[in-house]
Length: 201
Image (tube, helix red, strand yellow):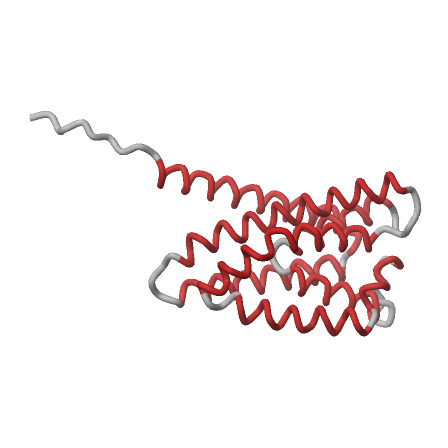
């Protein structure tokens, strides 16, 4: 794979890691382990994620995150704990895409991955804070399932069409920034000063 494809894959996986870190690690590991047999080989450096121990841990994390994400109070706690974990995980996933070589290149990719994962996490966590304030549980579950489907679709696209990875990363980044902008507007409106001017008679 060329450098552009690898950067696109690293950016896409990192952005998605901000939403579902363990699912991304699991999917990337399965891609590395079985992708060649399916005709869509993964970047060679991803082989480390295909180790059985990594797959097992990622599988347990995916199950735990899937369940925790469906309960409003637990989801908020989970997101708080993962404010540091997801960006770090995104950086490591991005680093795993790139074969060992130039240290400057590796640091740049790790920073890219960490920043992308942080942006994805901020969008995800911020949106869920607003949803989780709803008194009924159904909106939280519906949004969580929508996030699951969004992540799964993104992972499938990256693995099945790695030549599209840069375009996919661009779309994911655009959606993330749009969501962050929307959250900024909503939060700003909640804290905007209220007018106290009495109505004119």
